[in-house]
Image (cartoon, rainbow, N blue to C red; front, side):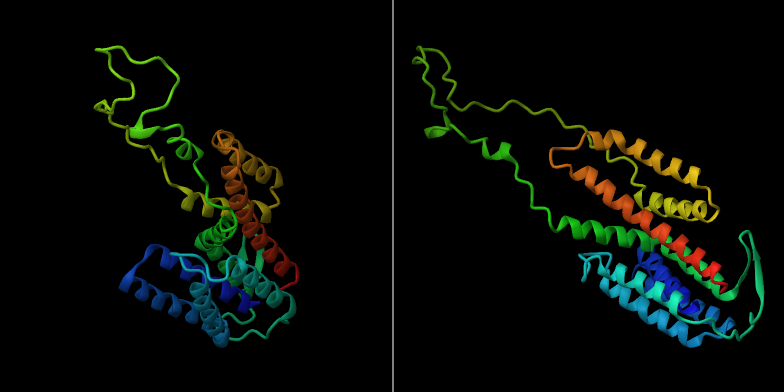
Length: 280
């Protein structure tokens, strides 16, 4: 189980670092994070597991870049989930070595072993920025199947135009001295457009907070509070969704992003509950 925890921890740290750091700072952060993972593994006598976790994290970063489209769409997230579940389900409990061998740590959820603690840290790290990466990959995968919208008003703008830009109508000739409506005139000055209000872009912060709350409420079995929180999100976003167009793109965008984010959080909670019940 510690292998699954170190893989999730390595992936989560890698996504957090590449989200906030650039250039040399990013490489320095990656080096520090690698040392932290190796030291944590050394405390539990799992050196090779740490190396495997770092390799999987490097592959994850290559498959799901922050800039551009994912190389395998949403499938790396599915493969990571299958791998972690298989490791927790199939790998037997190992003989603990290292500094924390045979020790149990007191937590609000009861005493837990070192391997379960590492798994919990890994799940928490994934809920931060990796959840955003997974949601983005899912949305981009769905967006690839939606054709580009065509603006019909642009096609109809030049309909009925006659020679010289005048509109052919069946009206009587224009009397002398009058202004021909088909004659080009100087355009009236356009009033300045007000600056667009893009609002507060807090999606990258709301997502991690939401997933952490879903994880904690699920582990503490606070299901009424969980249902109320999820319903409140839908109520808050309802005015925006209600202004959706004919194709329903905004509503689908909200539903896909929210459901994927909730699945990541609930999957992490279920993984921790399963590992704890298995007695790791």
